[in-house]
Amino acid sequence: MELYELTIHEASILLRKREISSLELTRALLDRIAAIDDQVKAYITVTPDTAMAQAREADDRRSAGEENPLLGIPLAIKDIICTKGITTTCGSKMLHNFVPPYDATVMRHLYEAGMVLLGKTNLDEFAMGSSTENSAFFPTHNPWDLTRVPGGSSGGSAAAVAAQEAPGALGTDTGGSVRQPAALCGMVGLKPTYGRVSRYGLVAFASSLDQVGTLTKDALDAALLLNVIARHDPLDSTSVEVPTPDYTASLNQGVQGLRIGIPREYFSAGIQPEVEVAVREAIRTLESLGAVTQEVSLPHTEYALPTYYLIAPAEASSNLARYDGVKYGYAYPDAADIWDLYRKTRQHGFGSEVKRRIMLGTYALSAGYYDAYYLKAQKVRTLIKKDFDAAFESCDVLIAPTSPSVAFRIGEKVADPLQMYLSDIFTLSLNLAGLCGVSIPCGFEQGLPVGLQIIGKPFDEAGILRVAHTYQQATDWHKRHPTFPEQ
Ligand code: GLN
Image (cartoon, rainbow, N blue to C red):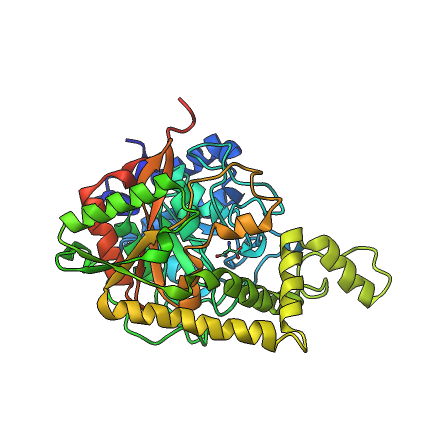
């Protein structure tokens, strides 16, 4: 077995036993990146010097007697999370040269735990998209089939873990951006509950929906990462002061008697038949492990997409107003005056999807339309949340597909925004309702992974990870990796 093939928990044991050093592990991953990332294009920035220095430091900390599961573990970070001294581009020309003067809170926690930074991963510009094709730099390729997308917007993070260019990664999820790429790349993607993980230092897209999440090879690794990043943060006023359990502690408790709800509306027209077959088979597996299932209804599901595409662009239009060519990043060089600078900087600095969102959002928030669009969407958001509240009265978790289809071809949906938006039809509602969710692989269709989504009550990450882990003890979909490079 190659060192780059290890999961976080496997590497952690070998490091603790001194069978490997962090320097060796980090070197193996950097070599892997150098060997194959030309084809996958998961990384925008690789940080070999930082990584080797941090690996050496982690080995020293261990020699000095320190122990913890992430000490010396190399990880990849989505390039929308601020890293002090290392460019954070958000996949945008606008921030192509932006070097944050501080670390995001999640980075501080990870560094304290001893992580090693391998690099910053590709994404759709400002996390707007579902295929990573909206990156201003280059598209990322799905390691299972290089002609296909890895999903998005955290496509670089998902592809890096799938291609074994990192044992784990952070992504962000505003409407599905951790779970959908996890599904399309056959990895585990956890979106914690809004408020569970600090957003301080995460470049804002839609502030009432954004949440940092994890991409890993299995549920145990997701629990290990969440243990480090889930903490109340006084620097983020929306971070919630609730106790954070040890997420590994309850993983082995099984699903005997667990009440699983199957939302009828998530198995509707538009879902690829093979995806439904794989998800229903996984539900049967969970039943055979002792879970009890029942059908439930989430009647406002059909309004989730329009609701999200009013609220998210409205918040984005406000958040992105700060990119004016004065304070950060790109500035149009030959502006005639300040107004010309604003206009031309934004015209040339943003890509077309970002501009589309800014226009949609500005329209929805403008006087005379605010009540009809934005306010109405907020009311529908409450109805969507109430649907989940009702379902959770009789269920512990809900199970649904993560994405209606397996990975689509690069170029297939870029020209049709609505088709692209539909790719998140099963993930958006969780962000609107403030729930947690995890996508795990549950099968393959013609060599491409299918994702199963486990949806949990607010702050019940331990519950959904337990279901995921139990399923992974009985199956081995999560152990598969693409043979890469093609041999
Ligand atoms: N694909 C959705 C969008 O484009 C979700 C993105 C995300 O979660 N960041 O807005």
